[in-house]
Length: 319
Image 1 (cartoon, helix red, strand yellow):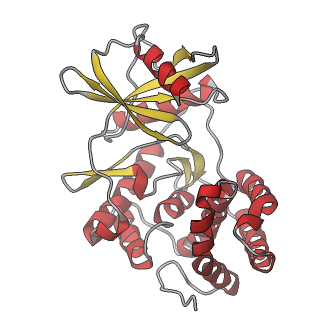
Image 2 (spheres, rainbow, N blue to C red; image 1 turned 60 degrees about the vertical axis):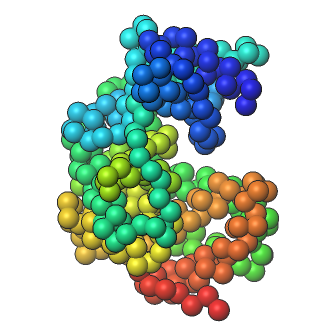
């Protein structure tokens, strides 16, 4: 962390920002700091991992700029002294990486227990507006972002298969295997077009939404890439209660209609999102206890999916 903070301080020297304080925010895909200026303005400084290519970072900023041009409020890049939005930075041990300075989206993160029905509907509407704005996005020739689909699911499934024993029994993992096979089979049958596929946030859970004056705004686009809109929705509603998920869909459909086959497909993407999440956290010992506690509910969802029973908006018996 000391090295990363030094990299952040080195990066700030390259911006026309009269900053007065720097505050660590979190470590996720990148390390983030809140920057406060003498006049009280705020920015988000991101130090990207050394493994991340400049083309990926620049492409994310390109998409955010395109969304902002449609009138959406979200983080956008602040150019450095050279007029460039991706800044080279060197850590104190000589490691080269990149940083970006972003506009700060003021707001409050809310827990799902404190979300009103209307707040959740507005979250659904917010996502629909993102999807609608992205339908006309024309990426540049150098645009590079991940594709969230069959190949990434296969990769994450293989990782979970190698690390599941930390929190899933061998017997229960047979259930996961059957569910993963069904997901893979379903994904192979889905067809994409401009109304159901495109650039998505891919991680718009309630932790990446801030509320200001009862309106939600999206933050942290670090995982953005190409994918199905229903996959984006699944990532958002996975952490909500079943009744809350229904309000989210209601809000989404105020802007964009969902076809008759949307819910069965959404169930597949929901299971995909669960498996991806467990794969991501599988080797983190700090998460193990919580993952074990979640298993009765997670496995009830998997059984419902395999049996063809609806589960997105229903309370499941986990006894």
